[in-house]
Length: 222
Image 1 (tube, rainbow, N blue to C red):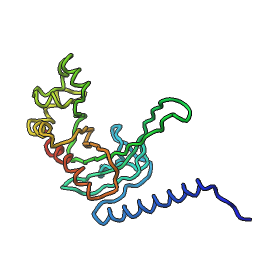
Image 2 (image 1 turned 60 degrees about the horizontal axis):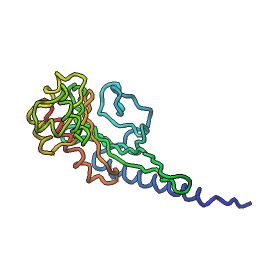
Image 3 (image 1 turned 30 degrees about the vertical axis):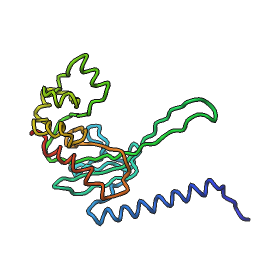
Image 4 (image 1 turned 60 degrees about the vertical axis):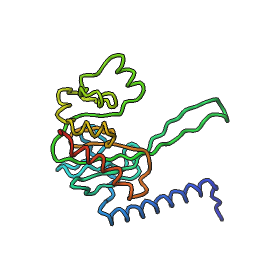
């Protein structure tokens, strides 16, 4: 007896197969360029970060089954071990009701991790938005401010130990932030992390993602 499959099920199956084909082809191209796909096993976490790490401290590798991570690659880059992963999250907003209700939207981003050999600290540097600038004008700077108006007006530093901030963000790194040559980033232990919107579908884009964070890593403490 013939079995008729619902058209929607057929479409879903074909979409899954097509996605697997794309991922396999992408992984093969990545391996040819020195990148390898990270294992999908249950990750170990270091310091609450979103990266998996082995017991002997190998390169950080974003786990491909954590918090919506679809694909994660790790490989040598400019003297560092860099990891690049694509993950997604969904935000939902509802306007109206019934058939007029809005649908959810999905944003894809890159997660870039650069493994350092020396221990670091816990610091986050974020570009100021409108509310942050307003709060600064009302309440003044936090203890983590550098004392450089050009930097402090554009960037906000969060750290549990304000006294250590200047040991990691010196004049050279501050100038790179002021000039707009480095992105927002956070450092937890030995893992500087930054992210940007997009999809991990073109290996040629990896240098543009990793290079600015490599610059941050090399200028820490300077």
